[in-house]
Image (tube, rainbow, N blue to C red; front, side, top):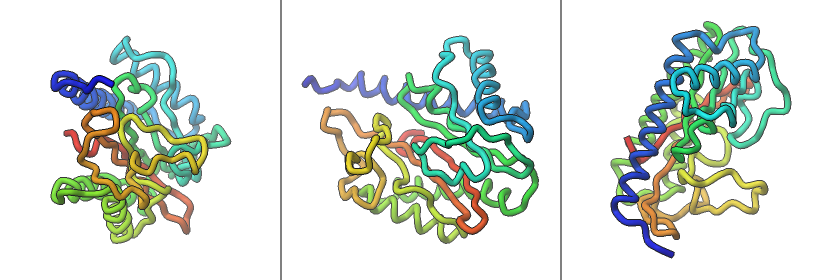
Length: 235
């Protein structure tokens, strides 16, 4: 197997960062136009986001659509598909996962919006980027950092903020996808309690490992949650 050269690695990193930039710009416009609002089906909001994305950049493919989930479906761990196409209700939290639309960049991006003024949900909305930034700063401060250590840091910071860290992991390699079966998980590809390998390393294919950080905060008692996903090791 050929080892990627320096130019390949630089282009790959630039693609990841550009994918984040494009997804961030899209979500900013989604919120500015109020596309996530009560009374719409999740699938209708996904269609509206897709059409806006194509308005902003005709190169965006028509498929796949972004993944939109709302209300109690925001408590589901990443990778577990909702069973219903819900109508967004007042005060719902809504997760918009734009990653599928930017798969060509190899990146991942998810943000949360709130369709109301419930103070607890607004607090969670504010805490998502704070916890994400704190976890990323912990990663940058400690050399080396294992997947298990960073997962523990994310869980601790979520608890200190008054939430539960949802799901069994807090991120993944940029080229990893959720397996069909739990026993098929490659621990070294996930920011999880089972990954005792350093996150800063080269992969088996000889590439520099780049990571997605996925912060999923949940209020287990009231049954709502939100997500904030982005690149961990690249700006």
